[in-house]
Image 1 (cartoon, rainbow, N blue to C red):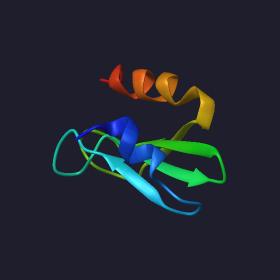
Image 2 (image 1 turned 90 degrees about the horizontal axis):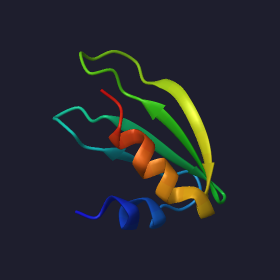
Image 3 (image 1 turned 45 degrees about the vertical axis):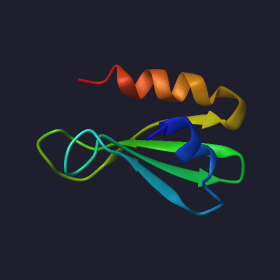
Image 4 (image 1 turned 180 degrees about the vertical axis):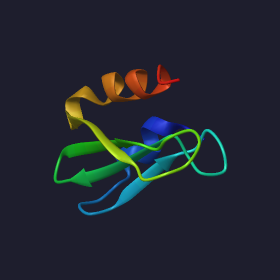
Length: 69
């Protein structure tokens, strides 16, 4: 699966969960051309806000979530 393509397919109000395990690593919401990113804790729990990225910065979004422990 190409994460970048999955994120770019999102329409306003849709979300994508970047899967690292059964419950995910990041929850990414599309609001117009802005992506709001929430981190899903490794041991479970509620996702918490991490950052906002404009569509033109999607490569930074993908890089940053790949560096989370």
